[in-house]
Amino acid sequence: MAAKNLPYTDYRPPIKHNFNFVIPRFLRYIVIVGVATLCLFTPFYFDLQITVQRRGGSQKLPEVIKQDTRCKPHLPSQLTLLQSLSPSDPALLSHGRALDHVVRNRVAKGDIDSVVMGIIGPNGILWSRGYGITRANETGALDSPNENSIYRIASISKLYATLETFILRDRGALTWDDPVTLFYPNFTYKPYGWREHLAREEFGASSSEARHLEPITLRQLASHMSGIGRDYPSQNFDDWPHVPPSFKSPGNSFTPEGTYPQKPEILQAIAENPLVAPPYSYPIYSNTGFSLLGWCISLADAALNGNSITYAELIKRDIFVPLGMNGSSFLLSKEQAKHMAFPRNGSEADYDMTDAHNSAGGQMSSLSDLAQTIRALLNPEGHRLLSRYSLREWLRPLHVFPDNLTQVGLAWEIQKVFDSHGRAQSYYAKSGNLRYYHSQVSINAELGFGVVVLMAGRFSDSSWFTKRAIDLFQPVFEHKLEETTQNLYGGKWVGNAADGENLVTLVVSNGSLWVTKCIINGDDLLDLYTGGTPLTLWSTGRLHEFRVAVGRAELNSDSSIGCFSYWATFDGFNSHGAPIDLIYFSAQSHGLSLHFPSANVTLLRKS
Image (cartoon, rainbow, N blue to C red; front, side, top):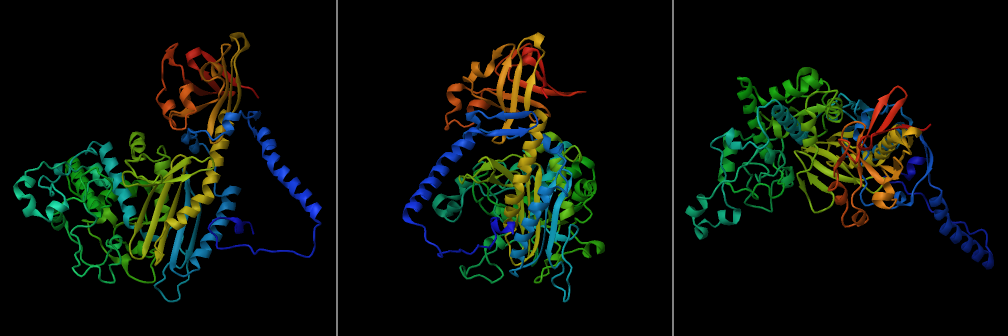
């Protein structure tokens, strides 16, 4: 029955009233005053008694940590690789049952033929379930989908085009800022806007055509920042707003039905039309741009290796085979066809989107295969597809929308989700939609997990399932990372008494790692720098290495400054050849040692 209290269920408990007894009026006042007093003072009592009951002892938290601190750095994401989460973890099982309840209720509405979804960690699938009927187009079929069921993933294909571009960049075949003209010397577009394009006589042709063409680069193509329109050549309906029933909205125009335009037609359409907006203005979602990206990287690979292969062969060679993605392809083999999920309506599974469009939306994959990709991004040491440099570059936004919610990266559709501490967690996602296939992949690199949803049917919002999965599972991964961090670093660290007084106390609170006491060679550094206010530790991205976020005392509490006073003051100066804000840990036979190298101090954790 616990699931009834979870968000997004349709269950509403009945309201029950009992009028079988009457409380005298004076007793009502006593009860009301008593309850109000209890409500008023209980929070203060518990606020004063907040403690941390983890390794390192029971520690009362300073008042500043309990406050809504404006800048709360994330805990070290590298520690997610040290966690021992498994599919049998009680918290995962419990939250999985809750999600199962929510999904079953939604699938029962009848507009979803099948859906399979999973929660992925750095070491593989932690939870997965399949619902509905895999081959909904067959009479009498009853089997539900599983991890190996194959779906068309539509625009999730764009992630693989981007991944391949990074792979080729790491090999020296190209750079992200290479212009399209490096691969297609005759590539061009109209250098003016649509207002001028539709009124050529008013503006005059000669001055417009003499304008300089700003370069369109691979980076712009992958981030939808090139300004190239959605689907070229554009469909034209002179009877608009009356359009054919099959064309429900501009967002549904990319579909396997019909004859696909090929490279010459597409390049000509780009040349004949103005851009939607100048390059680097803001993202304009462009299937055409990703088709063009696929052509360019295929040419870059051919120049590097001396032989030409198709885009599909390129992705198979560099991604599918190394990751063991046996269910992924652009055309189904006989063996793969046995595992294909079919919607009740339509026959999109059989379409060949051709090499001209495969990089934009032609791929088919399974939950198991997509999980391998997520593992490679969460645990690059286990899969050497990308350099760590490229991975850090990829998991970054390139455009921030003014909604305080969404951003765009290289293929990523980034969404903020606030965690238990009111801090934004970034989910790097990519969705894919055809008429009857809908999918989404979403990754939280800070907490070390991802969500995959593959779906067939009329219902098109795959993010509905992703949101519910994140709501239920994110707290599990938050808690696990906090527990891991506290167990590794939390507690009192003391030095050799002969070296003078040295004491550092660390605690995980409010989602960050805090220094609550720092006495080095007898000097109280917190008192010296912040008047006693605790400071956070920022991971450098290297295992066991941190910088103390000292900031500027007069600015740290200014809510309008945010994190600026901290990141702007790192690495101020050195002492004994090391930065004064550096703290790191090293593994010894007895466990970890804490090093404060700028003071030549080493500390051990007090048991």
